[in-house]
Length: 468
Ligand code: HEC
Image (cartoon, rainbow, N blue to C red; front, side):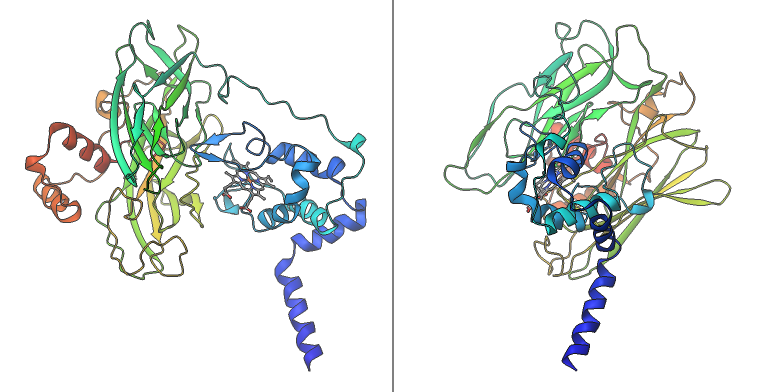
């Protein structure tokens, strides 16, 4: 009896673990035991070292805590690597496998690569012959900027001390790109943010975009860009987050590197950004799967360039669906296991995904407010829109361009800062005032112009592809 039970559970195990473990055994049979130098290192070079190396990618404060460039560095992590890749937690990528092969910046391993790493770890992580190793992968070092040597580095204007007692602080610094820094208008090719301290949770620097944990730098495909003009103001909306306490105060001085197209070059497509979302959701206490849906319709043929779904700690799933004028539908992006720590931007290869005029883009987001969500700060709370990470947000950022080469979006399409206006339900001002009062305890009538502007911007979600 005992034996039969054991057999049953073993075969169950085999079932759940296939096909990766089956493939792992297969790899054993075919090429013998994989070794670090011959088999494992090439996979790490290709898929992991972009982050796991000294000076590896700093994605909005997400820095890989260990380096995987030599046997000595990797050996202690063998089991952990096997677990992480088998569970598909590393490399970090959160789109559904249904969208495999669609996004340009996809980070996934093939089943064979997972099997290889797993069977190597199972075999005791053998080094093998160092002569089999590929040459070390060279990484460009443009003074630490991954977008290449910048044409212009700008900063938030002053050093700022985040005090000991701060847990969450929002503060805006306004700087400008002067004529000395930029004598003539130039088209932006790439922008990369460098948080000036570990307490930076996110930066929204309109009109350049921003950075949140897990974001890659923005590099536009050739032919796509945003115009940067001398005298342009940049507002650095900083969100600092840390444990409060004596000695935890720290200085911040965050920067951004800009790379431009050559002088005189005008890209064919102006990049626009929009944030689909709602502010009226109310997530009941304990609800394991609450969803909210909104949509926008594109009036012209459009090239979709990428998406960044943004929720907070209870965020569970995100789904972007195109509803075409002929009645057909297509799931553009499905994120089944949203992870607040990785604010991934899902980016199409050039020239983007073309959709015809009249296409509706529908966004559905889901939250888990149950005690089963390990990130849930309080399952007994009814949760509404708000800035702290303990409240929730619903933003489906979309970047896109008009499909017609040379088309100049009207100021109305672009908005004041290169962000699109409209395209979403308008909010009645009186209703909005009441909502602000009820939800956030804000009194519109006594607020300063600056505060109003900030609230409006947040409500419109007009904050570039990288939200916070
Ligand atoms: C985009 C950057 C990035 C890439 C690519 C990446 N990692 Fe990571 N990795 C991280 C960061 C950041 C952490 C620490 C935070 C975390 O655990 O989420 C981490 C943590 C880990 C850990 C430790 C997990 C733990 O806490 O025990 C392992 C093991 C790991 N990565 C393996 C890999 C392997 C193997 C690859 C390639 C197949 C890979 N990573 C690719 C960024 C990356």
